[in-house]
Amino acid sequence: MEFETTFYQKFPKDFRWGTATAAYQIEGAVSEDGRGPSIWDTFSHTPGKTLHAENGDVACDHYHRFDQDFDLLLSLGITDYRLSTAWSRIYPQGHGRSNPQGVAFYDRLIDALLERGITPAVTLYHWDLPEALEASGGWRSRDTAFYFRDYAAFMFQKYGDRVKLWITHNEPWCTTFLGHLMGEHAPGLRDAKMARAAGHHVLLSHGLAVDAFRGLSNVGEIGITLNLNTVYANSDSDADQGAQDWADTMSNRIFLDPLFKGQYAALTDAIVAPADPDLIRSDDMAVISRPIDFLGVNYYSYSVVAGDPAAITTAGVRDVTPHDEVTDMNWPVKAAGLSDLLQRIARDYTSIPLMVTENGAAYADRKIEDRVADADRVSYLRRHIEALAVALDAGVDLRGYYLWSFMDNFEWAFGYSKRFGIVYLDYETQRRIPKDSAYWYRNLIREFHQVQS
Image (cartoon, rainbow, N blue to C red; front, side, top):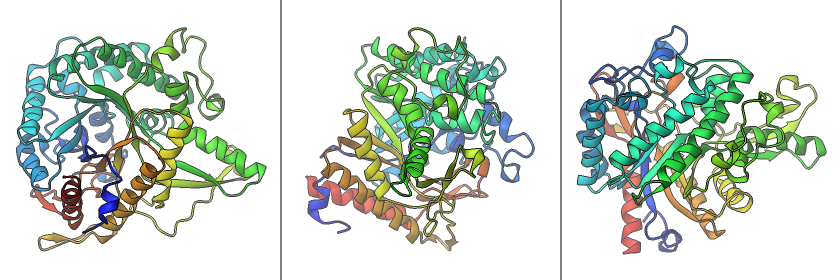
């Protein structure tokens, strides 16, 4: 047995052991059946934006192979699956007339999951804004928040009889900072004022979608997923504590505070940019902070920071995180950071249920014949799942864990160079090969259910 019986008993009997993917990273079929282009189609086809000029045109060809993929999920004992839907497959122009073929695709996909006893958790936005909306201002435009509300309402009405777990946005930090301030993600902008507007409108769209959800009679739950990072100060000195405050605001408080406290953190103006006078309107913060049913937490790494006046470009904050163990993304590993993060959220922000909606690691996996022996990933997963038990022991209301990711896929600006999956993808043949970590996870889930039964 991987863990002692008493370990498994720390988890609720209905704990969700799942895995996750995102539409643009796996679906392919970008020009089929009426799908409109998204900002990631445009960005990935722009020279110099992605490694080796790679794109999601084909990706994992999940659009044509989802039955095969769901059979594989079932064989691995995974009964909870987080996916995202492509906005431009439903609304090619972002609004207006819906696309019947796109609607039918997600009908088939959701039904295929349920036929296998797999529970879907649907993320409405995983970074792939319809290009038609980007052309009219994208997330810098307040109109986009209302178009998102309408898209969300359509999805709730169409699929709410079968989908009971909804996530409005995945990682608004990435949309705001990587997409609009650092230029590393679509739409590839580098403008602080635009980033501030985009971040606010993403949050507003979340609240508007929650309102739309509450107005329907479908039974279900709705939340949002944030990528959060445990930030430690290098020492107890005033300089290092100040650096921690800045870095924690940058990584965490910048979205946690408006969602759960109805106000932006004090350092937001300094970290991003002051809000234009007409950006935040009278009811916006009340809408943004509407009560939700759960918070999704994506955790991959941690940081240690020190105060350093010479670090001018980072407001006197220097990253001193040890790199003695890193993943293939060069992200430092600290499993205890996950339990510390979950406890911090429950202590400082909310008592609502939490779900780890992404956690996993990229490694330079090698296929030898028909086996991928990814011992590093197994070790990573084991330690982070142990951290879940620590959080549960501390009283955190934790309801689920979705491993990232189900299979290797298009890793955004890194193209196909980074492998996060527990299933290996041979991109030339589209062959799926479960890695050792997939079998390890299967055994863990099986043992959990044996103990709980």
